[in-house]
Image (cartoon, rainbow, N blue to C red; front, side):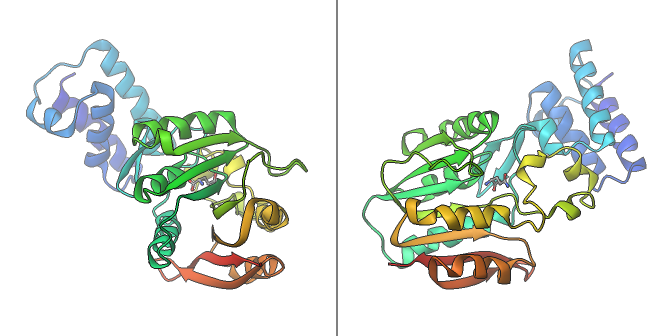
Length: 287
Ligand code: GLN
């Protein structure tokens, strides 16, 4: 099979299962199988694939047809203009979450926080939030926390890959347990995009998400609010008085999350995403 034949074969199959950009995805998957960039495949149409490359390509094409997200096939996702590795142990970084990162960056800029800041990212997953903050805020150190060791491995690789290995650290902790998170000092900023999908809604998610992304990264308990309650309960021990908190939320959770954090925070605000949905809650730890 040549490069052109491979592209055509995949694009036709993708069209029959209504994949949005069949030719584009075919090209991206072929690049992964050949370990080459797009310009290479478009200038080497006649090149024969080795039997190993052809096998890998056909397996990937079938996985994609069965619904596996493209990012788990290529192993990459762009986020905040940085390249992140992803595996099936982590949620694929979402564009919506960039609002959360931008909110924290803006807070640091507008309040002119020039001293060395400590930031805690709870439920760090791929580390996309922790790594982006470390990358764009030079005067900070970020600790990412997650319960999954496989996720922490991915987060660590992402930090090194984006040259912020020295500014970041990753620790394992189960927020659902009674144990405190082992940090030496309270943070200046706490940020989190925790699992927030309500149990009943998980079944209705798109199969690409429901069947492939880690359930542990989606499941927020009966009403999707479990992690917000846990974080609010632990906040006094991990965030300095007057410290800033920013949380991603589901489009219909603003009121509940504000109520949960009203106990420990002041000046709670809602920030909308680009589609006009409530997406982020910010606030300050009570003094
Ligand atoms: N914080 C990570 C992200 O935004 C993981 C979120 C999660 O696992 N729910 O991608």
